[in-house]
Length: 330
Image (cartoon, rainbow, N blue to C red; front, side, top):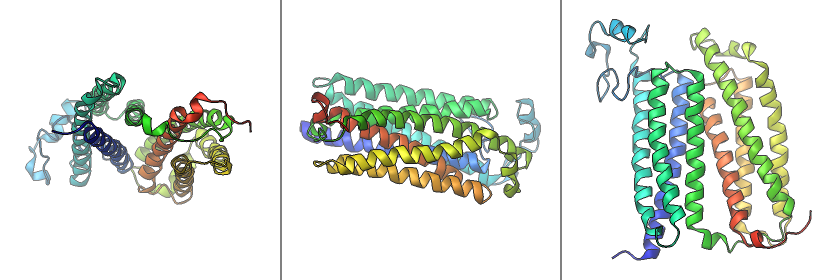
């Protein structure tokens, strides 16, 4: 019989694997979007009417163009690379859904000790179902940018809930973190930093939507000329990154300066700053090197990772010993 400690450890490992899987879904989704493969499968849940998509156009009905034109998808053209890219995206999504289910199932061990953990995990499971439905709506809408944005924000919410669920299950450990000597202002500024990250992601989404239209107008070629048509929000988004770098650097510096800095808290802060730098480098690459396809999904993934790392750092402060004690002034 599995002991409670073993079950808790298994839940934590499964939860961490699920978080990794959700981030992987975001990465693959970014690749789909950057490559223009979103309509690689014009129907859902099947792909060109098959559970396993074809590898050659000859495997489709001769009149498949007309069939999909009647369904509202004009100019549907089979492309094996785009079709299988989108198909892999769906497989990764389904696999993640199973992992979320297993996480929710394994969380039942907390029904006697902390029911909130169970209900949080259950909420994530239902959200994944909603996310799957939203994915089908994205396809049905013929990739309307606003629907793609909602799809991405839902993924961000799922990750945040997963992080909180796993962290809450380990709150006895997190409560031992010593953060009383970290300036009180750090926690407040961290909240501001998270809000700024969300704002930056929102602006980035608007830029991403504009790029989608620009890419379509250029038929996904001549990437070196896309920048000429970037909207003003792009330049605001680009400039705002400097402020984000500064505020996160300040947070890391203050944690580093604290006499009794805890390694987990400091490592989480280092992770935030590292991710911010990577996001900025990816953004510069997009700006200066003609929007290379590989940089787009990386930029999107890292932006989501920044918020996740900031959120985890905030949870560390929330459950640490400083939560019930007055903190030192700046």
